[in-house]
Amino acid sequence: MAARFFPAALGAALVVLAGVAQADPGQALFDKHCAICHQPGGVGAPGYAPPLADTVGQRLALEEGRDYVPRILRAGISGPIDTTLGRFNGAMPGFAQLSDAEAAQLANYVLGALNASVLPAGFVPYTAEEVAALKAKPASAPENRKLRERLDAALKAR
Ligand code: HEC
Image 1 (cartoon, protein in one colour):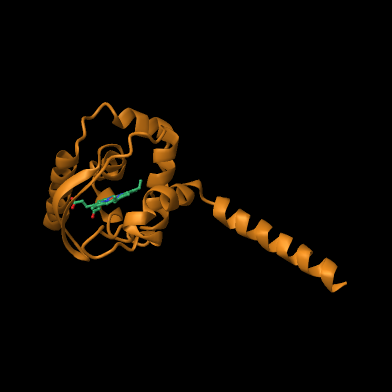
Image 2: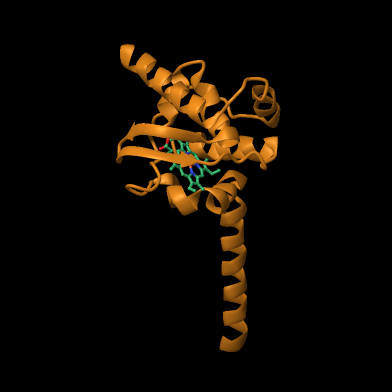
């Protein structure tokens, strides 16, 4: 009886775990590509990679703010930035190898899940088509830092 019960329980547990892991494809992509630097859940690591949780969603209150995370996914970001974990002056590589659909899923996880508490009301999830259309706008790591500066100055002035 016990010998039959335990494998069944283990099997059920694995099914539950697999279900959790697959629940959000954006989270799976984040854990694969981003968590090594930004840490699981995007809490950041002092001196190494800035936090993403509850820190980047505010910028979506501005129209151009919607471009920010997809542009960083494509081209990275470099140069000094001030964050809730202090100042960073590093360089993050872009992830141009991601498909538009993957980039949209990642942006939806970083913003929709990790920044849910600071997102402006009515957040509309990104689609692959929107991410593809953004490619018409040039992006580079130093320009993305300038965009960050512009957005934060505009938010402060509000
Ligand atoms: C090799 C380490 C590394 C990896 C991997 C990485 N990042 Fe970064 N990321 C950084 C660093 C370092 C910075 C800050 C760069 C600077 O100082 O300008 C940064 C900055 C950012 C920012 C801007 C944060 C802010 O405060 O405005 C976002 C958004 C971001 N990363 C998202 C991601 C996502 C999403 C992924 C996965 C696809 C990812 N990063 C993968 C190291 C990394």
